[in-house]
Image (tube, rainbow over all chains, first blue to last red; front, side, top):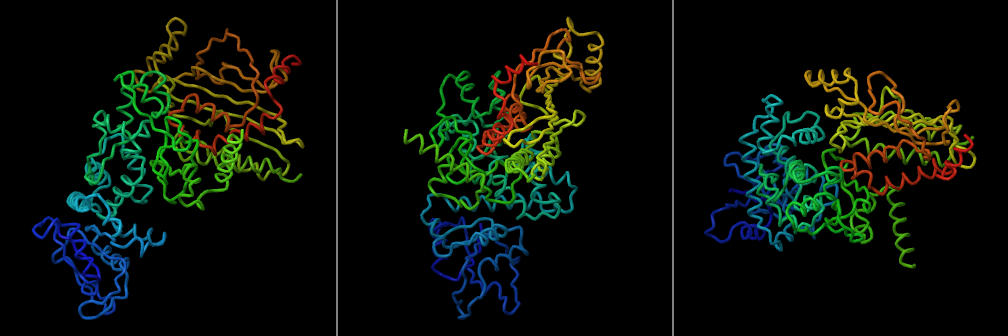
Length: 376
Length: 240
């Protein structure tokens, strides 16, 4: 892979080298360091084209105010430079590379950054992370490569052809087509027309894989079935046909919700078919396989099985102890609604200003009952 | 008469729950919209009147409930009343109906019980692919009919009822009596909750188990059933 690293500090270049390359002989990833002014000089309206030797991915630092070798300073930040690059090169992944502690983005900046960057990488988080960043970035670049090769001419294709190419790219089961279509309609009024590789990559990574509903990660899949994440991993071979194997699948483990339902239905009987999967699956499993599964435990009162995942704490919770948490104005009906648990509110986590008056009243009532019970 | 505070709250909060419900594909497209409009009007009702009507020719339809035999459920209602000074509802009209339909040929035609005419319709449906369907069960939630000759509690529940048109082919034989069981009045939200909990719990649980939903069901209960506990309804049977 070839990466461009747009930063104003030599030191940071060395750091990213050490993260992305094991040693000097490791030629998996080649990283070219560019001072922002060497690349784009907005003051002279002189833009250097980058398509001569196009990289597979670009890192852009947020603050770019240090002078370059000619002692010239740029007066732009990473978001401006990336906006320019994104508008000209939508077929390359771009990563914002910044310090979380020093330069934490304001919510509005973060929202803007999400519309430009494929990933926001915080230098201080990466340095302490056990995750293999190199592998993750390679997966993103590979995904782009697949999209560029398969869907690069989306605007010229018939709408149905475009959709089927997308389904193929996702290795999507037929039962999920309607949900994917709903998601596309919610994102854009004209599904897949004039969609760039970046838009498609964002739709897949930030919506499909980023929000639970059509695909589930292990926590959401386990909780949907009413069992603990550990129990789900123990039996996940039972759900192998539900495993997501489409583009970007190397980034993490995901399962198609519709396939989880179909596979679960195959062992459900009688009343189990009429109750939520989170309530029926474990009894069916015990009958069919003979062993008891560890149930998803609610973080508010320890009840089992929990049916939902708290958006803030990322832990299982009973729906009755959750409130609507409108983190985004965009919520496709195909996706699970974001909900905050009473526990998260009690621990003062999340942005409580997002709660509506009805929700606040219900939470206050819950606390009142809790106190009354404690005093009995 | 100023707009009643209880009615304003009822209108706002019930409306909000119905709007949330409308985002999910449980009811047939746009089915709840008319009801939402009517609920919304209540908060502007200066004379304290309530009018909630889901007509029989445009029922609320739940397609594919979580049941192997039942293929769709429709809900209708006609509620007219006025809030009193005691903050309860004085009903002038009250009638709600839930129909459970099936297009399963094995259940639509019972050779020993049904006429050959129904058998022919079922066979024709199987051949043409346009499934013949019939009502397997119908629930009524009614107010005592002044003209009735049957002893009815003031508010009651019964199953069966007469065919409202010639195409619904009720499963229940006319010869069976239909006892009126005392049952307090509900609003459409409470009826929807009852139906979903019994026939669509799997798909609707993420909505109906929310505390905002259950809290509002409690408030509807307080408003609509304030004066009608089971005992008083049963007693009303003696004065019928």
